[in-house]
Length: 216
Ligand SMILES: Nc1ncnc2c1ncn2[C@@H]1O[C@H](COP(=O)(O)OP(=O)(O)OP(=O)(O)O)[C@@H](O)[C@H]1O
Image 1 (cartoon, protein in one colour):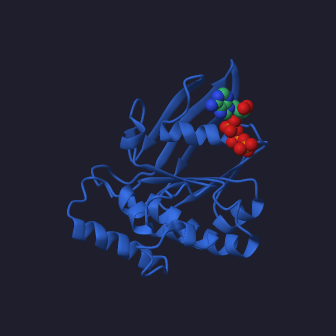
Image 2: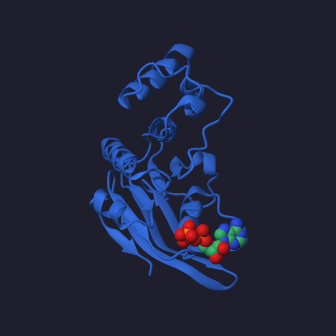
């Protein structure tokens, strides 16, 4: 994980997002390392747009003001690939033409050199998710729960300093949902990631056990 900045978490300093001259959302928030904050609100209230703004992928038709600061560094003008912000979506978006290991290795930063080292990081990550020996598997052969875990591992291997969750549990059935949710939250805390989760399910917020912000 990049270590050139102190770990102060993710700050949204009076961030406001407008579309077509109307304010969609305004938020002022500090998320500490390892803290999980839940963001809820009606459809269209701007939750995913806020995550896009933090990642640097919000389309130009949105107007934004305020500052996004990660571990003391302003992300204003910073290209998405240099932000060290990971995002997990409801669709796992695994590459179908790559093996599980290939999907994971793809996420590793270029600064991680050497085939053996890259292979070791991938295998350790799979072991950490109780998926020992899955590196050569075709993603199409995985169960829903296994695919979800690989998607999370892929985000973690990219060495993020903050994690955004955009309804990542909504497509899983209730038993899987509970298991995967616990795994995600455990990894957020273990990796000391300031985490912002968007969800429509109040149970996700209760399970996270942190602050819940309701935009309603
Ligand atoms: N690329 C885009 N171009 C134009 N408008 C967009 C774009 N993406 C989203 N919007 C609009 O921005 C508003 C906020 O959308 P957003 O997806 O952020 O809401 P949300 O709170 O995440 O909704 P949901 O809970 O349904 O996912 C909506 O009116 C949406 O139609």
